[in-house]
Length: 325
Image 1 (cartoon, helix red, strand yellow):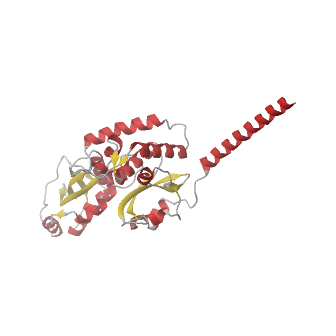
Image 2: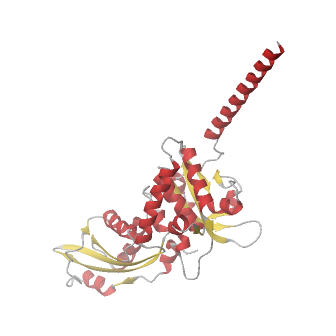
Image 3: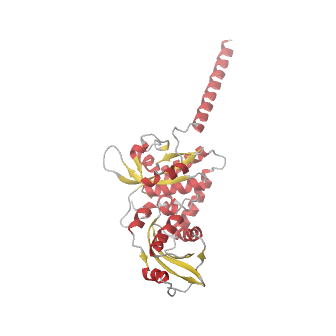
């Protein structure tokens, strides 16, 4: 399955080395500042603009930044702005939602001056699995789904289960048709009802965040008892300040819910081998995994059932005692 982090590492990166060398030698600037481009003071501001363009599935984008750098710095900057643009923000249509629905980029960086301020302009050519019109349909559909599920007075646990069940009940696993990547997207899953694991994961990510439930998409390999390993995506979701595993693709395919809200230290991790980026200390600190099954709502539900059962038994006993009396 194609994934942006892997593709971008092998995508050709074009840099105007000559321009960078000229600046190092204090020669004339390589370009005049473009009045239509904002030259941001920080990389975070520049990345935020890039993120907005990517949200709208724009394919050709120019980003400006106030800085002075050499050729190596230019190359790093092209990738750094992409990385920052795709950071998890908690917004439903940002972060992993973009990262797993765009397929790669080319970047061209050049240096110059805006007045006396050294600046860099980065031109991106971006490719996506879906387009702006399809995203507009998903926006509308996501709003309808959340409204229909009536989540307002539900607990976090109930919200997660309602959304998870919706995905499993309304999406069918289907490989890409010839030449089509739409099965990797929320459009494929939520509009056409057919997707591969990536489509399941981005749809779950989107709807959970729409409901205020934090989650991430995890990329790695799936490994079952028989057969080879395959590229795969799944989710982790926050519930009561810790995170649990979700794999809607496998639960849908197996007509079960055995891969929903799974803690760490289980067979899930033997079958789902996360990429190393999700195993470092900083990620673990941000997303602490639960080490026990979640019992909160389920425990309360069982108590209510038991209480109702006892009340019914008492009622029957009273009724029988009156009849016998």
